[in-house]
Amino acid sequence: MNSLTTKILVGVVSILILTTIGSQVYYRLHDKHDTEEAVLCDINENIPFKGVIVRDERVITYSGNGALDYLYPDGSKISVDSPIAEVYSSVDAIAAKKKAQKLSDEIADLERAQNPGTTDYVQPDILQKKIDSEYHSLLTASLSGDYGALEEVKDDMSLVMNIYNIITNMSDGYSDRIAQLQSEVDALSTRAEHIDTISSTDTGYFVSYCDGYEDVLSTDSLADITQSEIESIVSGESQRSIPSGAIGKMFDDYSCSIVGVLDEDKRIAEGNSLSLMFSSSNQVYDVLVESVRPASESGKCIVVFKCDRLDDVMVSSRVQSAELIFEEYKGIKVPRKAIRFQGEQKGVYVILGNEITFKKIDVIYEGDDFVISKNTSDEDYLLLYDQILLEVVLNKDVSDSNGSS
Image 1: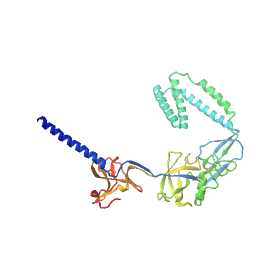
Image 2: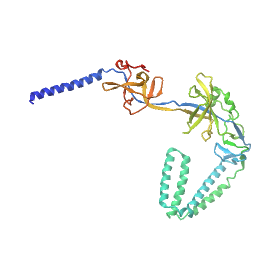
Image 3: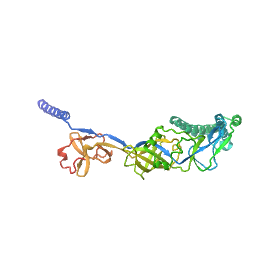
Image 4: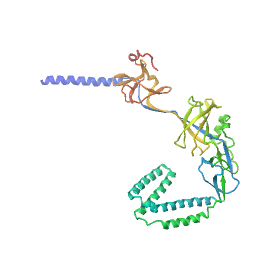
């Protein structure tokens, strides 16, 4: 092939390449299609509200003087004649009692650590692994702010380390330390004698505080409670005085009612079982919609939920920030105006290079002006980052039997 022919062929190829590039540039510059990129969408239709917890409660009173040390956590079931609290001459006496108890627990751990029944059957390498595990648990509790767990792990770790010291001969024993601690316990105990005991007069669940609503709010009163009454309790405007001598309250049933003012919603219907979460806990509670009636404000309703569960969250406060939990939808957002049909198949047109292609959609949620399609890797369906065509393409839509959605 001579040089002239080569030059002609190179020139022709160059022209074709330039023409192709130019046509692509022209197409890009003059393509005015109205498109929207397919992106992920997360729809959460939970309903937040302020709930008022209602039970049939009776106030427990004490006419004497002194500082109270409650013997059970709030929400505990107490039998008739069981002690609810001990009365001490002062708060300092209660502090002395608690310190003496802590020192007594330390004595018990030291005695256990040096007991031959413990030390003769434990291997150092096993204890070392246990110490490492407790150390990691200690860091986890510290970083998460779980101070209750932190104290428990610290005590467990101390016990294991004390046993390790004995079996590795790092310590001969803890007799001197035990004697010192026992002396402190004896001194504290003389200051920590209680002067009276308050016992339960019946069986029920006990809570160590009152808020003044015990004689106002009851399960029977919920039929007549108004929106303004609920909102005044929630806001704290309706403060009530606590009965004189009140030291707590009792109630017979572990279940409770939760009443609140919510926006009207067809999902909140009498008899429906729903899920609820309080802002102070990550626990999910099952509740039953006991009643729904119109509130004084248009578009609002008064809802009473029934909850058959009792824990420290449920007794920690009269008013709780709550949220009704509904299904969460995650997928690809599709503008409703972009939806087309091929026969009965719902989908959208997308632009792939120079081509306009129909892709199916699998609708899992419908909003007012958009739907959510299931996110998939199937090439026949709309994929993430596809360019969705919003305008009508006549030569594509002529045969559509249903038209646009």
